[in-house]
Each structure stands twice: as C-alpha cells, then as structure tokens.
Amino acid sequence: MPVLHHHPLSAGSRYVRLVLAEYGEEAAFVEERPWQRRDALLALNPAGTLPVFVDHDDAVIAGAAVIAEYLDETRGARAGETALMPSGVIERAEVRRLVAWFLGKFDSEVTGYLVNEKVFKRQMDSGPGSEPDPAAIRAARSNVRYHLRYIGHLMARRRWLGGNAMSLADLAAAAELSAIDYLGEVPWEEDTHAKDWYARIKSRPSFRPVLTDTVRGSPPAAHYADLDF
Amino acid sequence: MPVLHHHPLSAGSRYVRLVLAEYGEEAAFVEERPWQRRDALLALNPAGTLPVFVDHDDAVIAGAAVIAEYLDETRGARAGETALMPSGVIERAEVRRLVAWFLGKFDSEVTGYLVNEKVFKRQMDSGPGSEPDPAAIRAARSNVRYHLRYIGHLMARRRWLGGNAMSLADLAAAAELSAIDYLGEVPWEEDTHAKDWYARIKSRPSFRPVLTDTVRGSPPAAHYADLDF
Image (cartoon, rainbow over all chains, first blue to last red):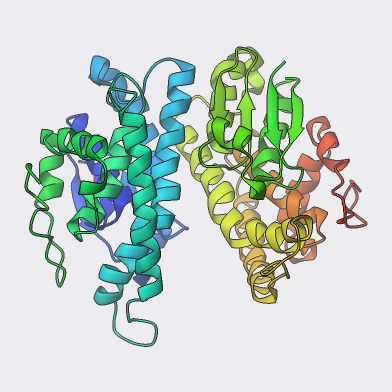
C-alpha cells in the first residue's frame, strides 16, 4: 500500500489526503514532525518538508503540488470524468495558477504563520524562540481576509474555483482553509460566496477523515467538524 | 506574437525565456517593475508577480512554473525528442520536484534576497526601507553554498539535474543561478561538479540573450557573459 508521510495540520499534507480520497485511493499514514529533521525523512525528501508520498512500487514523490500532479497522471485517467485536472491546456494552467496561489501565497501569508505559531511551536521542545509571535499571528489574521475576498470574487463568477468542474484548485484552497479553520481562524462571516463554496467542499465524503483530525495540545475549534458552520 | 511580461533579473522570468528559446519560440518582451503593482499587470495576474505570458490567442498564463508546464503542453510535443519534460511519471515528478526546489526554495533563500536588496531597492524610488539589508545579503551568501553543494551532489550521480536528459529542472536551476551570477554572487570555486554543469548550460544558444542583459544602475559582474568563467 502507498504511504503518505504527513502532519495533520500540514496544509500540503491535507491537500494530498483529499486528492487520494477523491480518487478512491487508500494509503497508510506516517505522522512526522518536520521540525525534527529526522534522517529518514531527509533521505526521502532532502528539503525536509511534508508531504512525501511513497507509492506501492517504492517510487518516492516529494511535495504537495508534485504529488497531486503525479496522482493525476497515475490515477486521474482511471477516475475519468471525475479527474481533478481539466483536459484543456488553458484550463490546466488556470488550475495550476490557483494551486500555486493557495499552496504558495496563501500558505506563506496565512497558514504557515498560524500553524507554526499556534501548533508547531507548542509541539516542539520548549526553548528560546518557542513562544508564539503575536506579530506573525496578527499578519495572518489580516491576510486571510484578502484571500477570502479573492475566493468570493472567483465564486461569484464560476461554479468552482478553477472553472466549471471541481479541480485540484478547490482541494488546494480547501486544504489550506481547513488547517486554519481547525484553529478557529477563518472569519467566514466576511464573505458569503467563500463560505458557501467551502460548505460544498466540506460536505464531500473525501473531507470526512480531515474533519476527525485531532492534534495533541491543540483541540479543534468548536465548529470545525460541523457541516452547518 | 506571444508577449512575456518580465524583469531582466527576475529568475522566474529568465526561466521562461530559456524554455521559450529551447523550444525555438519567439516572444515580445515587456519589462515590468513588479513593486509598482501596475493595474495592467494586476489585471493579468492578481498576485502581481512575474512572469506573465500572453499567448498569441490572448490566453493569459501566470507564474514561471505554470507557464513552463503550459509551454511543454503546447510546444513540447512539437519539440519531440528535445522535450524538456520526460515522459515517465516518476521522472516527471523528479523534474517537478527540482523545479519547485529552485523556483521556490532557492529563490526564497538566495535569489530573492540578493535581487531585492541589490537591484530592486536601487530601482525603487528611494525612501524608508530602501537601503540594502546586510543581514538578508549575508543569509543569501551563506545559503547559496548549500545549494551549490546540492547541485554538485546530484551532478556527481547524473548526466543532468533531473536525470539522463536536459529538462526543465536544469533551466530552472540555471535561471536562478544566472540572476545572482549577474551580481557576482556565485562562489563557483566551491563545487567543481556544479560549475561544470553550469558551463554546459551557459554555452547553449538559448542562454545567449540572457547573457546580454543589463540593468540600469547595476552593471553585470566582469565574468558574467564569459563562457570560461
């Protein structure tokens, strides 16, 4: 069986879990603490980052966006009409632009700050630099509003983020938002279009395992698993 | 004719110029100053970043990695044996991992600091925060050594960075290195394998236009265009 090296609140790991579930693929999960820079993880991915996917033939695929493209190329054809990457070249580019937006820009402006400050620092051995940085949390709370408005802007014009069909773009955005929603950090009341889109994604069977995640020392926000949030 | 919105020292823009040249594609170039957040550029790419490619049918493709995948899908088949993306799914994942390494990790740990501090700040209207930050430059100079060793490590084992054939991985790495080589910031003497690999890439006809770039107020390092550096 394939193995996914992940952390429950790593948004990139959540993205791959959603893609696997949408394609009906099973995998074993190995929880990692990427800040420990474990030799075995570095051997799989010299960048030391999550997620890393080890396929049933021992092929090692590193990085959320790369794993999703690989799963689309190896499992997407089988999924046929429900493939998460459109067939047109311009539509594919738009999906990839949005995947990069959420896994890159959103992650570095919002999720990275919040998960690092509120979760990872708590899980690390305490020591210098292990206190949450209020400036980083403030920046994330300001930035998330702009991103919610951007999702709302797209959803006022499209059926799904990337176009007419659900795609990797929706899963990347939902993975990032779900990680900070766990922390109670999404001001959903700010944008109805964004909230309605997330409610649709959140109700999918592929999302259920993500909604049962718990992290030691950081219980989920009260509404986290609630489909009527 | 397609149009590329770029900056001469944006490594992502250089990457796309190299891909275009390897595929024998012509494009018109529009030089942008991304820190000005020009409305016309934001309309093409809401992230406000470079590069942006506008194809001859007015399709707008934003982001270096996304444009390269698009060019591979629209021009790679025509290029046949010289396609820059391998056909095997595992080999494709390895090329994508390395493209993400250089455009993402290398750029944020090395090129971004150096180009921002040494070039962009000089081109901006002067004002608060426009002085180069010595700590950022020091960090980049330390980080580049680790990345050169990683290139050397790969090149001691492979013909090209991504495997047996030249690929997008080599062009992404060379684009990043060329931007800081312009600034005289690559300690080539540190790794023979890395230097030999770069000499091979630098000698390709696709590289010639990049070697004639000049930026107002920041002349290139003396050896920048020299194929025997």
